[in-house]
Length: 369
Image 1 (tube, one colour):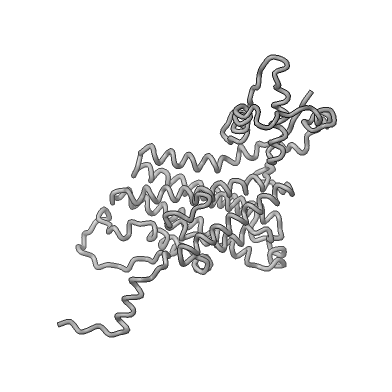
Image 2 (cartoon, rainbow, N blue to C red):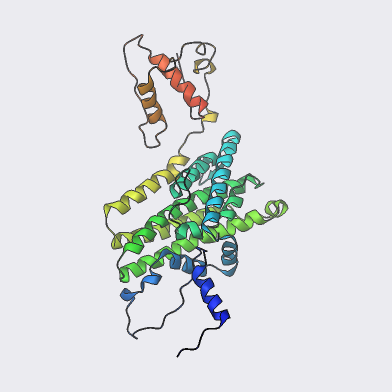
C-alpha cells in the first residue's frame, strides 16, 4: 500500500492544480521513451504557444528577461485592464501628436508621429474588438508586458525625438505581434514534422526580437527625465537595425509558415494586417502640406465661400455617405469624380463634404472658385 501523502504534499499538489495564472511555464522534462525518438513525434504539450513564449523569454539576456517578466500580467482580468489603459493612452497621445504636428526625419524623409500612432491604434484593435474583453487569451496577449507598454507610450516622455523613435518602434512591434498571432495559430494546427520544428524556431526568434525591443524601451521610460536627456539610449540607427532584423526574421517565419500551410486563409489574414501597417515608403512620400503656398480666398470656409449653402440635414444622405466612405478608406482611389449638369448642387455637396472632413480632422485641402 502506498504511503498516505502528508498534508504539505497534498496542499502543494492542490495549489499547482488550481492556480489561476495564465502565465506560461516551461514544461518539465519528461523521460525519453526511446533513444532514437524523432522530432516528428514531438509531444503535444510542447506544441503550444505558451512553450514558444517560454523559449522566447529564455533567449533574452538576463536584463531583458527580468524586465519583461517583472511586468507580465498574472490574471486574465489584469491583461484586460492593462490593455484598456494602453488603448486609452495611445488615443490621447494621438490627439496630442495631431495638435502639435510632431514630426521627425527617418531615412531621409519627414514622418509625422501622429500617422504612426494612428496605426498603433488600428493594430491594437486587431488584438481586441472595441467594447469586448480580450478574447481567447493567447501567448501573445499574455507575453506582452502591457503595463510597460503603457509607460513607453505615455506623453510624459520628455525627449520628443525619443518619443518618435519609440512610437515608430511600437507600431512595428504591434504589426509583428499581430503576424505572430496568425503564425502561432498556423503552427498549432500543423502536424509534427521537421518543417514544423523549423517553423517553431523561427517563431521563437521573432518573438524574442520583439520582447528584446520592449525590454530596452521599458528601461528607457523607467529612467528619470534627467537620465533620459543626458544619454540618448536609442537613436535612428538603432531603429533601423531593429526594423531590418524584423524584416529578416518575419520573412523567414513567413516562408516556414507557407511550407506548413499553403492555404488561402493564411495569406488573407496576413494581408489584412499588412494593410494597416502599410509601407514606410508610402508614408515617407507624403508631401509636407504645411510648406505649400495657400490661396486663402479659395478655401471652403473663406469669406467668399463660407456663407454659401451646404446640404440641408437629411438630404443627399446616400451620396454623402458614399463620398465619406471613399475619403476614409486607406485603400481607396485617389480621386472621386462628382459630375452633373450645371445647377444640380455639385458645389453645395463639395462644401458639405469639406466641412464634414474638416470637423473630423481629415481635410487635407479645399479649393473653390
